[in-house]
Image (tube, rainbow, N blue to C red; front, side):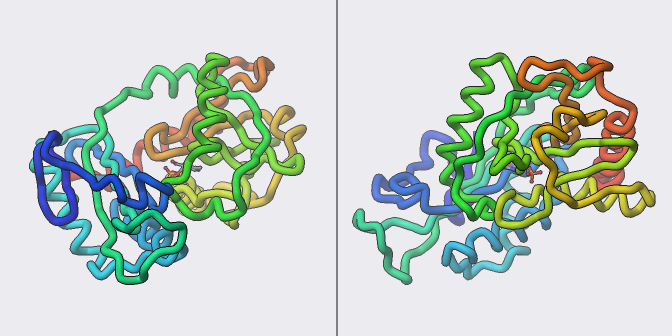
Length: 281
Ligand code: PLP
């Protein structure tokens, strides 16, 4: 496997980071995961724009233009002969002697490498289970920060319960999943949490809403309560790696149809169409 470390493409075992890298010590950095379809990164520009926004929000200023970074990532995809899978990239604030505060002159450190392809086909066809958990994260969930401690804790809880995802609840309101955005359908209307400081504005979420607009399908950007989640006709999550993923059971309670609902299936198909047309070479 070839790894992009700053401006060099290296073999996996040659790519080393310093023990005083602030990403390693503090989680002081930001990241992205991009999906690759037939060698083409889907919504790469949008992911890089979000990376730059996240970096700016925590005071990491990147000298390189986003387009240049995109080009280097394309080179990395080629160097790895990637067809399908993910691309992980992270930028840490840089290397510094261990203090909480930092020097403004630090050089941000970039690491990017391929993630293996994992099929989500069966899960998308049959639906997955979720559990609910209290949302105890900080109040800047709009930043895609390397600090994922609470997300990890609740994802592990889901995994140990045999579930796919933890749905987070803050003050009775469903915010998002530990690594996904959450949608409900009630009486034919799609609903999801507003893109504010309480959630990460997912690229998949945005793409789906774009598709909704293009088709004239109704939706509401409006918070909903846990009770509304449990009483929804359909529930699904979105993320780069899961795309549109039906949720058929929450906290052990199965939805009446126990299979992906008609709206979710329609959105899945429309999303797949968008991927197909945007990754055509
Ligand atoms: N919310 C959180 C907390 C996430 O970590 C992720 C993805 O990792 C998402 C939402 C979905 O974002 P995207 O669709 O850009 O993958």
